[in-house]
Amino acid sequence: QITLKESGPTLLKPTQTLTLTCTISGFSLSTSGVGVGWIRQPPGKAPEWLALIYWDDDKRYSPSLKSRLTITKDTSKNQVVLTMTNMDPVDTGTYYCAHRGSGFDPWGQGTLVTVSS
Amino acid sequence: SVMTQTPLSLSVTPGQPASISCKSSRSLLHTDGRTYLYWFLQKSGQSPQLLIYEVSNRFSGVPDRFSGSGSATDFTLKISRVEAEDVGVYYCMQSVYLTHTFGQGTKLEIK
Image (cartoon, rainbow over all chains, first blue to last red; front, top):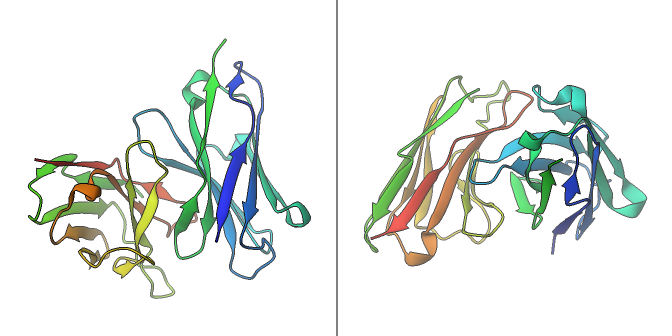
């Protein structure tokens, strides 16, 4: 059974850097074709894709956020880490990681990140 | 690619069909011959779950009352007979252009 779980801070101040960790189980980040993506969802709004990393370390970023995002993986720890710099209140929302196979499935439970001074 | 869903909300009597449209501003047909259009359902308080991948393929465990169709820029998700458990927000998503873009969502309610 594939599962993913997000962890990281729940509250940040403007200009701070967000670091989120996605811990996976039930699959390996070294398996050909596998990817893990990050998606966020502001309260009451549609999801927004942020970044994706594949088993071969190929990385893709949202063009509008690329300058602020870094995605990395640690295969030995079964973790994918997303960093987002210069956080702003508009970045408030639930951040999800998801397994990228046929589509994005499954998703983690999500973690709510609030940016406020 | 901008994804536009219609309607934004619909109210359906149980047992009746429902249909959601998703239009892309650019063709979602990849040079590899596949079309990367997906459908998700987000139930209240839950993470989105994949229903349909690559236009018309039902994901594992998805009931056969859900079906997807379309091509290029116009796509449709149909529910043949709506059940109470189908309530939630439906999103389409594309992943052709080195990025992934979601539609704004369609909220399905039961009458």
